[in-house]
Amino acid sequence: MLGEFIAEGFHRNTYRHKDNPLWIIKVAKGKRGSNFNKFNILCNKYEYEVWHNAKNAIKQHLVPCLWISDTYEYLICIRGKKVSEFKIPKILKEYVFKEDMKKAKNWVEINEKTLLADYPELHKDYLITRHKYKKCKL
Image 1 (cartoon, rainbow, N blue to C red):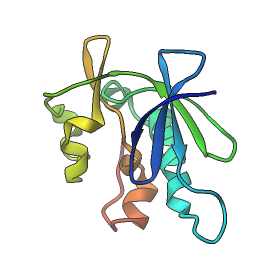
Image 2 (cartoon, rainbow, N blue to C red; image 1 turned 45 degrees about the horizontal axis):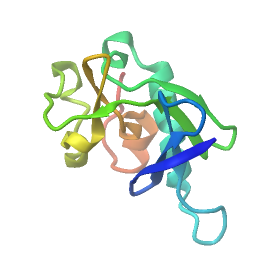
Image 3 (cartoon, helix red, strand yellow; image 1 turned 180 degrees about the horizontal axis):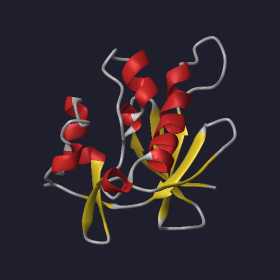
């Protein structure tokens, strides 16, 4: 399933899908055990839930999530092209609150449209548990 390594993030690593060049796989870092950070797994879970529960007005600005493993360790998404410039869509401005989310590395182009590629922070539970922000109503 895992192809070439693409990038390393704080909670996940990203790989090309071995059999489908249009997909990527986000893999939660670490093994279950004493040094395991539960949030590494939750990033995949939260991103998948945001994609599948977001209103269409929001969803159209997010990279689609296709599949998630039962353990949330693996998340398959559509692969996009890196962008160097982008503009945060007006409808997402109130949700894109972390500085990291405002960087080009978290946005890609798919079918000539710029989409947010890394968005577990948009999940209501992330906002409550990690940063104590208001609930997000996507």
